[in-house]
Length: 267
Image 1 (tube, rainbow, N blue to C red):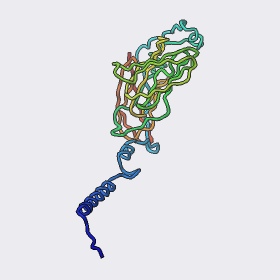
Image 2 (image 1 turned 135 degrees about the vertical axis):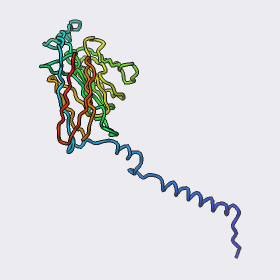
Image 3 (image 1 turned 45 degrees about the vertical axis):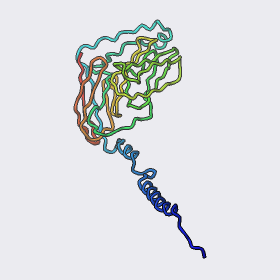
Image 4 (image 1 turned 60 degrees about the vertical axis):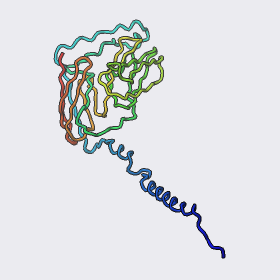
């Protein structure tokens, strides 16, 4: 019977094959499985959820001290579609005061949420153009939340947004035809009272506020507001008006309770 032999090449191949198998096993053992505890899980855990079972709220009234300027009636005769769009006079909205209470103040939580991160809602904030004015006059949205622009008028409008300093890439300028469809835009940077204007109708003006969390509100025609769904904690609440500036206030929120935070602006 012939004698079996092992060549020199075969002797080298055995240890090389063993090393290769060991390397494969090492990498296989450290590869995270689908749905495992990788970065995706860490990111997901940072996205805070609002627990309605333990949440509280903040409500209050925005008061105005002093003599409120009389609203100025706007002449819209340059565009018949505007002058015929409404039977009520179109007046300036810088100071909307009723019984000493101020509308169109943006209120939001600035500090106190710690490292909580809230994902933006997919439901858009809506700004309409109706009666040749922006509705609402003051609007709020989260960073990453779509803002939907509508034109409900039988005339062409323009939406021109230039954040202060002209340094925000989210500034843009678009036109919408009469009774046109909607257009959406997502803002990636925070900002307060960012002016929105129409190049076609210079009296049209609104203000956009973009924040990082969902805890914000705009005071209504009665000067009241409510910020809901806040977890237990102490927060810095900010109130900002387009002409009267910014005020801050500390407020503590308890579960299932409504804390009161009133502001007074003076002219």
